[in-house]
Length: 502
Image: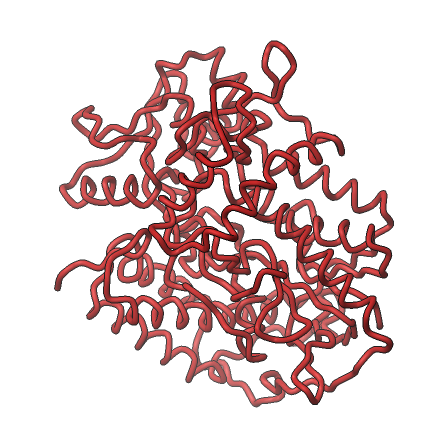
């Protein structure tokens, strides 16, 4: 199949890119592993940053400086200024297409303060912000007749004889067959990789770093993969996210003695390390929002109450919520330029799979939803412009022969996947040591070498989830290797990468 712009991924970034490209007048096809409304964007709860000043005085310059400070000097000031300056117009556009933001008494979009912010800046829709944005973007894409094809797993980026991206090979999950799509521009919007930490992550089981791993195999450069943000408040037993909005609205962090031990609204890396230190003393850690009152919780934090009751069997109106830090957001990804284009000509990236140099060593809370819309639009417009300048499609044959190998079933990759997640959480997590990083790297490389011994047990290709999860595990190993090698190369502690003495 041929199209002008091929987009892989249908979360907030992919849908925004699709809308922008379609409005530019080109043909667009979107491929997605899951269904669009199940994308990771729907799990973002706290809000989307913009210096509107609707609740208290704020400025775009303050937003810029807060972002740069959180990034620990590793962000591009030019990119940060662009993103923060575009924020008010981004909120206006989302509002215009129907995102149902919560409102003040005088009908302005209300805002809350998240960690690292100097003012209430996060526009929100109760604690369902990402969900409301995602569903609205999906409806907008349908209005523009964007063609979407679901249940397609990315296998390979196709490049022509000059190394220019010209399409992709995917596996149709329903039939198990391979399909080739050719395009004048390709956009990756496949999300992050924090599920390499397995059950120690707030993310969907599908956040397996597919786009990053496949792009790297095609020759794309990766940047800052070692920077993985651990959210301070995942539920203790399930790792389900309890939004930063709970602390933004006044929630406390308590240890077993009932003591507050940190500034709850410090940047996430600082709060996570403070919790980690308490846990190492044998303390259990809790989030306390009881003092906010039932009426306030039901109005502003209804999802947090529901999640705590469902997954921890506690009611935060009356009970403390047991929590722990868990992998949440990946700052690293495919390196892109100011046009959102990767080091491979014709291959663009946006959203969590990309690195636009706006998060640096630690993402500011509320900037992820902003990034996917601002740079999703940029990627879509630039990919469309490039497509309009190209007269005809190039074609290429697949080069990745991974599935053509002979596989045995000596090893169970599900067991190894769980072992990988626990090992990364312990050794490549909130606090890192060189010897432990080397231990983790050895495990990853051994798994990579033994992939042919992890063949799948299901013979049918139709909806062969065993095969799909095996291919995802391969991508997880490649992403894990990039994280660990990046961590070993960066000797100094900065942001989310904290190196301890042996």
